[in-house]
Length: 312
Image (tube, rainbow, N blue to C red; front, top):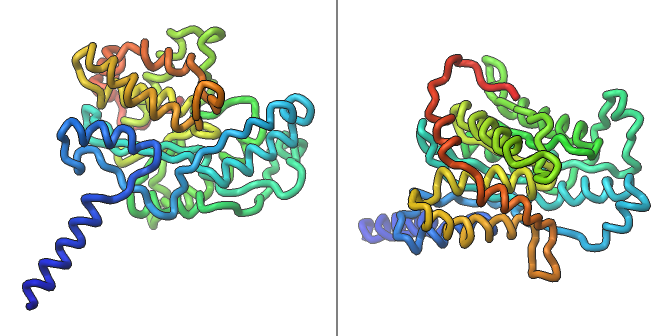
């Protein structure tokens, strides 16, 4: 009888681990690897219940953005607090396997009143009002999923980026603090943009290579995000999927990018169909499709000349 109880308990534990739920958009790559016969432990990343993987694109905000930008930006801040657009994958870096999570800002706060642009300009940041579970999610990832680094890819036009970075960074560094100080690395990437026509492919390629080298440079798992977790995050994550996880055979890799990377990118931009494209930008996929993986592999294979992390 005791033996049967133990067997049943072990069986339940096996089921809970073997069939654990992953993030919504990450199911695309998970299904691909299952079909290829890989074991779940090689690719599966469980979604913590406290973390939010919802993504939302509003089609009614285009006019407000043109006529009342402050109100538009306020809405975006609230939307980001409510929908974290999370996903994750295990990546095979030369130094070993690292789980990289992706999201929008995990600041978990918003402005109840008007955005205080003048105070922000002077470097005085309000405390904000709590919204959603993003802050609790970040703490969970630090405590239970070995997150040791946040790479913030957003340096765009929204002035609230300074406040959201401040909210998120403080929460992260406090949560990674021990008797020896903070062991967390918060890296702000400067001037990274995805405008292919304005920047040109070569400049974007160089930025992506440096960003992924930064992700690889810090021990432990990582979280990357931009503002809403769609475009800058989508490009970097997509390139890592293509170059670090995708098949080495060129023809097979091209199919992998189309059937897996492209679908995940669409999912994270709330793409529904040709009429409702959400935040989808074809130029983002063009960068991923044409990205030279050999250059990334060469950079990652380079031995570090310093024990210090890369600052960008």
